[in-house]
Each structure stands twice: as C-alpha cells, then as structure tokens.
Image 1 (cartoon, rainbow, N blue to C red):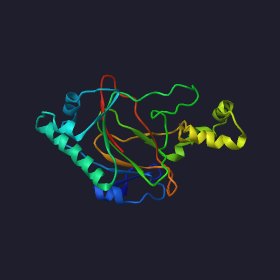
Image 2: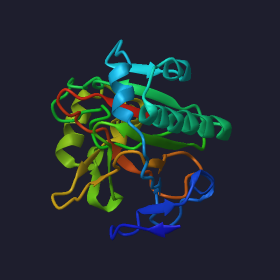
Image 3: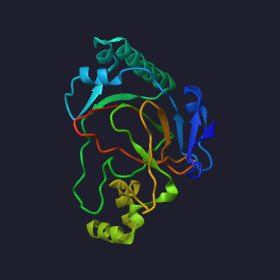
Image 4: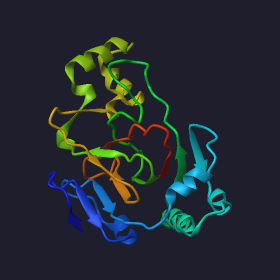
Length: 232
C-alpha cells in the first residue's frame, strides 16, 4: 500500500480487491483506493438504461438484458464482477443510475443532504464502498481542512433556536437530525475528486472505528448527464 497525495496521508492505494477490504485504516488514512484504468464503454450502458426515477436502482438482470457492443459488454462484465466481489465479501452493493439526489432546503444555514460535506455513521462496524463508472464523481476532503458545522458558533446558535428541549437533550437532538454529520470547509481547503472507475473504501463513524470518518460529498451532476454509481 502507498500514499498518493501530499495531504497528510489521508489516502492509501491498493493493488486489488482483497487488499482493499483487508487493509486496516490507521494513522491519518481514512480512504483507500483501488486505482483502475478500465477499458469499457460505460456511456453505452447509461444510454441504454431507462431512468424511472431520479435515482433508479439497476439490477444485474437489467444489465444482462442490454444489447451491447464489445466495449459495452466489457464495461458490463466489470460492473457485474464488482457487484459479485462486494456481495461475496458480505456487503450489499447497489448500482444506481442517477439524475439527481433530493435536496434539503428546509434551513438556509445548514443542509443535511448528500451534496453537503458529511460523514457516514453506522451502529455497527462498516465501511462505505463506491465507484463512479460514468458522470461526475464524488469528492473527499482531509479532516484537518473542515470543521463540524455544529461547532460553528452562529450555526450552533440557530440550531439551539430550533431545539424545543433542555440543554442536556440538545446533543441528542443534533444526532437524531443528523446535523452532527455535516461539515464546513476551511477557506484554504483543497477537495480531492475520486475520479471514474476506481473502487473506493471510505471510513465510517462507528463505535469501533480507530480513525476519523472520511468527509465526502456527492457532486453536482453535469448538465444533461446521468451518473452510474456503485455504492454500499
């Protein structure tokens, strides 16, 4: 495993799937990348799938039913193999054709959607796996370059105005509404784009986690372009 960024060692790169799932997060590393340069026409798959909702889950059967060119078939085999690897590992991967996610615009001072910089949380040990095959790719940021929004005085004050309870219950209120998962970037922050085709494993906030959870966000989609994303 090697580090590829001069960002304090947040990212480790691995040579294959086995190393991706068996390498422990440690030190400042909370993101692992199986870097791949894949030969396949993923755009052909996107153009032949049918978007039923803004987020449409694509099954293996949906993929297999497509009539594809040789390069389209190569792309399909890559996706099916990724799905099988993750399933055999014990994960529950989902392949999504995405137009857009739902926006959270309830409050103008704090958004709680996936376009906001955030971490994932789980009650049990788990990781977030993702791979963007087509379209805009997600971003991550070193933890040192962001601040938890609930610790920013003006945001915290507004959240307290929303809270109808005692001071002792306020922290539970923040967690129950997922406000504590969201972050604001420092002015000099330098986000890292995850790119297409690479399979990533990101650290999640859970009771046994030994590193900081990975701060990430979904990208704003490119105009007129769908994303094809594997995630679990």
